[in-house]
Image (cartoon, rainbow, N blue to C red):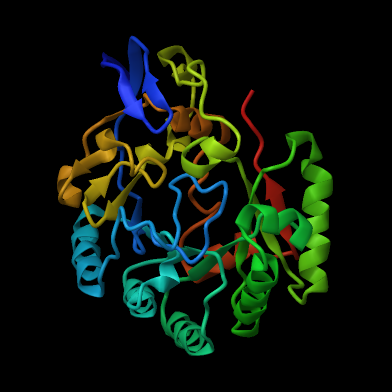
Amino acid sequence: MPSTGDFPAAETMNGPMNAPTAPTVDLTHLDHLWFQVAGTRCNLTCHHCFISCSPRNDAFGFLSLAAVRERLAESVRLGVKEYYFTGGEPFLNPDMTAILVETLQYGPATVLTNGTVFKDAWLARLRDAERESLFSLEFRVSIDGFSPETNDPIRGEGTFARALRGIRQLVDFEFLPIITAARTWPIEDDQPVVGRFERMLKASGYTRPRLKILPTLQLGAEADRTCGYRSSERVTPEMLAGFDIRQLVCEHSRIVTDRGVHVCPILIESPDSLMAEHLAEAAAPFKLRHGACFTCYQYGAICSNPSSGSKSQSGESSAGGGSTAAADNPMP
């Protein structure tokens, strides 16, 4: 159950946040384990990236196969059910393919990628590894517009064509990627925008497209592009009355970086997000003092896939019946 506690003003990338109390969320069970496998290194410099990843950002480093293997073994004792890999761009890590092959021996794996650096040899190896595994391998590919005109101003010139080529590669190797798009348009335009995404993907050869619309996070580069969180955009104890706390990623997840174990993928740059060196020590409650916690409260566990489990469970819910485009809806 959530509790409350006093805390001092917390420094974030948007300046100090002053609030007398913040609700505290317990880690009920470590269902999802994340890996910041490429640190903050990315081949792109997207203008809405909440941790400002770029080719020059080495604030967080790569995780080696040996480091990931150690955490995977540790995770078994804690009952982890699903694994996620993010960055930066994960496929800049030279161990990435081997890491995913290893992970498929433990459970379902999802990798978040911009789709622009795939090699056929990597995808062939991953296709074969998934065929031999009891578990599914998911790719989430980021495209933030349905055309070069809507995507490239955010992600960089030529990135739309490169990402679309990556999606075709995934489909050719029998994967059904989840296309994720950050909502950089008015929310009332969701339906026509989703429709244009679907038509574009089908015309490009992805006949069973899966689309996930995400809210932007007012941190990092996005705070510079638009604005940071207002002081009023905070979770209060009253807001959690009757709220399903399982919708918050910190209730069931942790993320491993080269610095240790943090509370969630969104807040790794915040000093208070670093929980412990080892997974078993990272179960302490977390105070929802950040503006990003407000976004997570509004939209649910935005970092996770809508379904998880074995290959049969995953395919049934996310690929059956054609496309499954769904925009997330804010809570009342």
